[in-house]
Amino acid sequence: MLGDRIIHCRKCPRLVGYRQQVAREKPPRYRSWDYWSRPLPGFGDPVGKLLIVGLAPAAHGGNRTGRMFTGDRSGDWLISSLHRFGFASQPQSIQSEDGLALRNCFITATIRCAPPQNRPQKEEIENCRPYLAEEMVLLREIRVIVTLGQIAFQGFLKMVFRGMRPSQQMKFGHGHEYRLPDGRILLVSYHPSQQNTQTGRLTRPMFDAIFQRVRRHLSAPC
View 1: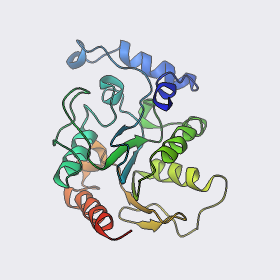
View 2: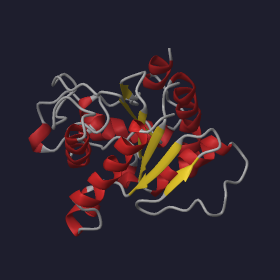
View 3: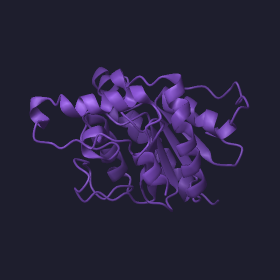
View 4: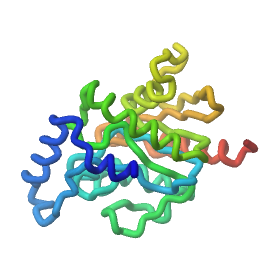
C-alpha cells in the first residue's frame, strides 16, 4: 500500500538522519514522548473533495506525533479553520489518537519527513513527488486543492504538469486562484507557519477567506 511505502521510505539520507536526531535530542517539554520519527502519509477522507497540500511535517509536530499538522502551531491554525468551515470534527489537532476526523477533506504534503530549518533540498522534493502523484490518482473526488506556502505551490504544479511548463500567469501569491487543465480549482495560501501568523503576514481573516472560497466552489454545480 502507498501509506506503508511512504512510512518505510529512506530515499533521502539527510532527512533520515535529521528526523532521527530530532527524536534523540528532545526538548524538555517532550522528553516523555516516543517520537514517530518516520515519513508521514497523508490522512483524511479518501473520498473528500478538498485537498490540502502543506510543506512538510514539523520536527516537533508531525515528526513527533505521527500525523501531519498535529502537535504544532501551524496545525492549530489549519485545523481550527477547517473546523469552522465544517471540514474537521474538532478545532484542535494534538496527537494522532485525539479523535480528530476530517470531513470531505484530505491533508498531505510536498515532503514527508521534517527537513532541517524547514528547507528541503531540490532532490528531496523530487524524491517525494511520486507519492503526491499517486495520492492524486487515488483521491478521485478532489475538486479543490489548497496549497500552503510557495514550496507546496511550486511542487504541486510540477507534479501536475510533469515536465511541461505551467502558464507564466500561474504565480505564487496569497489568494491567487487557478483552474487546472483537468478542471479542478487550485487556491494558493501563505503557509500558516508561526513566522507568518505572528508577524501578521497571514491573519485569521485572510486564512478563513480561503476556505470560504473553497465552500463556494464545492457548493457550485460540477
